[in-house]
Length: 271
Image (tube, rainbow, N blue to C red):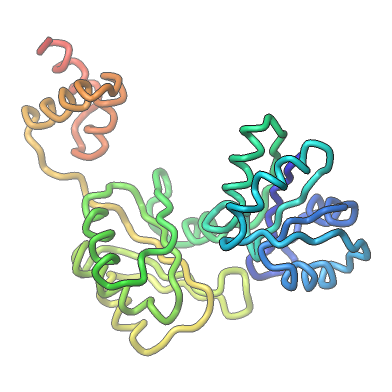
């Protein structure tokens, strides 16, 4: 069995009772950084010393099949340095390999920087997309942001403090300077801070220097003003590509602000 175990993203008090129990009895732990895991075991006063196997970005591809096979007979606890494994952290390759072999995969839920930042951002939470880290190179980052300019859902990004100001400045160029956003810094830690405002204003603030773990939350684009005729054409194009009519209407409605039911009826009448 593969057990994905969420670990604290800052405050050790967020370690769940289930996490402690599993680590107290674990025989094998696949860890993003074995040194970080050893410190976690010590901080949680866990006397157990399981076998620690490194599982990180540089070796997961080679290790996934081996660990998935081992998990057929042994329980393997998977830990990232903070938060839930597989979410912008190692673990996805192992889970995919385990699923392909029919190995049970379960999770111990817990802290998540993505959901925590979204919750405290003060921005819409009903629909959101997690974009992880943007490309480091300026041109690639700007291209990625340009592709997200019309994204209607709230967007969540990870970013390093050294690139935060440049990223926010690029967001101002791609999304407009006044697009509402929140920079969440050091979540659950002593110096936790949430800064809210337009992306341009936040870029100006970040230019002074920012430290710590960073999550950026950005409001999605406002629905575009599209005529009913153009919206119907979008629905028809989606249906022609294989999307179910009901799903196509819902997608176009979310992007345009038009009624999904009205689009559905118009599409039926146009057949």
